Amino acid sequence: MKFQAERDVLADAVAWAARALPARPAAPVLAGMRLAVTGNNLALSTFDYEVSAQASVPVDGGEDGTVLVSGRLLAEIFKALPARPVEMATDGAQVTLRCGSAQFTLLTLPQDEYPALPDMPPESGKVGADLLAQAIGQVAIAAGRDDTLPALTGIRMEFADGLVTLVATDRYRLAVRTFPWEPVIAGTEATVLVPARTLTEAARSFGGSAQVSIGLAETGEQGAQGIIGWETSDGRRTTTRLLGGEYPKYQALPPSEFSATAELAVAPFVEAVKRVALVAERNTPIRLTFTAGRGEYGLLLEAGAGDEATASETLDADHDGPDLQVAFNPQYLLDGLGAIGSDTAVISFTTPTRPAVLTGKREDGPADYRYVLMPIRSARESIIAR
Image: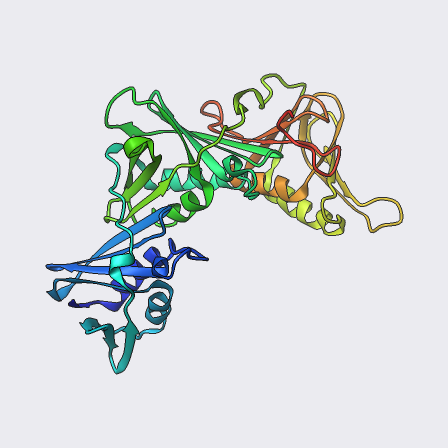
């Protein structure tokens, strides 16, 4: 194997493929990155039996061949290279990398022990890259991080009626985002559960693409676990195994009727929450007291009590409904305010002990993003009925 390529293009592809490398590989070869030259094309790929990533870049002076080297080491080397053309070539059981006056010699890993990459599933439809990346970011904040509850570490993706609905919950908050897509076959319907960590990582590569193709294989060969794949317009592919397990019946969680609604500017609300929360101990809430009416000082924020440090601040808010005091985890509240994508937040309540719904204010129809947050009555109050 031999090729030459521009450092910046190649370094970007190496860094992207390296993101899929496992933190603790089950076997040494799974820490490898495979480089395969065919004609004037170089394919870089990683795979750990769960997630695969593949990027292609044009090269010059190519001699066909394949090699497997340490992916993280290669990525670190490319970060440090000068802005000069790069040349790589195999030399027996080693790979030589030259860039300007810098030269590196890397040991190769045994290719016969490396697993074959899964095929990209057949294309099911397309969606705007920026739209998909934004939606993933909005819901991923609510995904669980407890590996003992694997289903909650995923993002549920529902495809129906020309719409995609993304859902995530960690039992204490719920995020739901709906947006349009272009299915290959009209009427396509499917529901899959995708690891949130993988989906979030994949979304970082969507920025340079206009559209993302989504491929679904809900069930693999002979009933094996299904996979989902994404391919950007610049040819970068990611596949991941789908999660199993039963997902909570989330549809009934957001209240359909409300007794009170508050509107307030997001930026000053975020800053006030951050300030007041400085005195809140771990897992203790920030208290919000809404006073009926419109205008000045409609909201009082408080944290701390008794002999502990305390803080309070007032904000302008328009509150429609009876006076109300509610307590939230301050970080969960900040996560939701950062995700609504609007300058004005709308918080809808039923009672101080029932889930509240946070959305951005829209003039052109119902909100396409909802963040449902459970008020705190105890340190670990769950939004999901037990």
